[in-house]
Structure formats: structure tokens, C-alpha cells
Image (cartoon, rainbow, N blue to C red):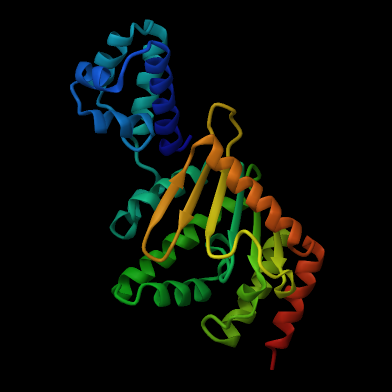
Length: 281
């Protein structure tokens, strides 16, 4: 299991124990010997208590020995490094969290208006996108970011992963990297859909205004009901997660609304093929 998911699960259990015991965060933080803000990060799965700190917190909560040992096991595994740690030099914290969740999510639903989603990009297309979005980054760092993106795509080959990608028609029309790069990218989309558990739907220009315009995001769902869904948002300069139930409902509703406006998967593949053929010659 991904250390990110274990950290998230540990934090949720700690938060539930504290809430059920009617103990305030500031009280438990004091008992554990940490700041309230650090405890909050731990409960949200963004940080992990040290072994002695967790022991002190669980003792204050009156947790039974068997449950305490289970939570310490989660803590030990959460402290391990995932494969993406090798890219820490070019990996923003929120993207690190995203990859940790991606490795365990059973269903990824992503909406991208103007570009092909990163998990479906060819190497040349990814290099063009990353270079344009981060002109201040060193060339060697761009290469590292492209390598990271290619490594993430290996998740699609695993049988327990499903990806549903909804993209705007502009994503298959903008000649990112030039006509040849886009043509290769479009044929790559067709091949990925044929090989893996991937669905791609295109929102045509004729759909007009819709609730997804102006924001790109991914909804991550997990096989275990104890692991709540999450929404990852990305802009040019920032990344964020939304995990509250009402936020998840809002993004799920929006995604479903956009999907209803999109072409069917079959019609989308036909349009993508036509767009690719138009770039030939």
C-alpha cells in the first residue's frame, strides 16, 4: 500500500478517536508533545507523528494495545518512501501527495479543458507542455519532470486501475509541440484506450458553456470504503486538495454534468481519429 494512503488512513483513525473521545486538538497535541498545527497535519494525512508521539497520543486517548499496535504499524509504513521520492528535487509537495494517492486509487476521473491529461501524454507532448508552462525551469529539470510523468503512467497498465478522462475539443486541436507531435499524441490516445481500462470523452465545441470551464481537476476513488475520495486541483501556479464530503459531491456532480455534454466514447475516438488524419501530410 502507498505510504501516502497509509498516512491518510492513520490520520483519519486518529481524528476519529479524538472526536469520539470529545478531546480537543490542542489537548491531544499537548499530550503528544507537538504543536496543534502539526497534529492537524497528521490528522489530515499530510504528516506523521513520531513513534513516541503517537504512543503518547494513543495513551491519552485510552486506546487498547492491539489497536495501538495496528496504528503504529500504519505509522511505520507511512514513514516509508514511495518510488516518487527519487524525483523529490522536482516534485512539489502537493504533486507528491497526488502521486501517492494515484498509486492506490481504483478509479481516476479527470477533466482537462485545453490539454491532454498528463497520464495520457506522449513524451514529446509532455515536454512541450511542461516547457511552455514552466519557462523559468532549467532544461535538466524539465527532463526530470517529463521522466516523472512517464513513470506515473505505468499505473494505467495495472488491472486494478480505471481512468475516465473528459477533455475539451480544444485539447485535440491545439498543436502543442507542432502538428507532428499532436498527431502522435492523438494516435497514442486511441492506442491507450484500446489497451487499458481507459475511457476518453471529448466535449465538442458545440456543447457551449458548461460548469467545468476554467478549472482542471481529478477525482480519486479508492477500493477501501475507509479511504475517502479526494479531489486534486491544479492551476499554473498552485495545487490543492479537496476532501470534505460536500466538496467531493460538488465536483462529482460537475464531472457528471460535463460527461453528459461530451460525445460518447465511440464518437470521441472517431473525432480524435479524424483530427489526427487531418494533421497527416
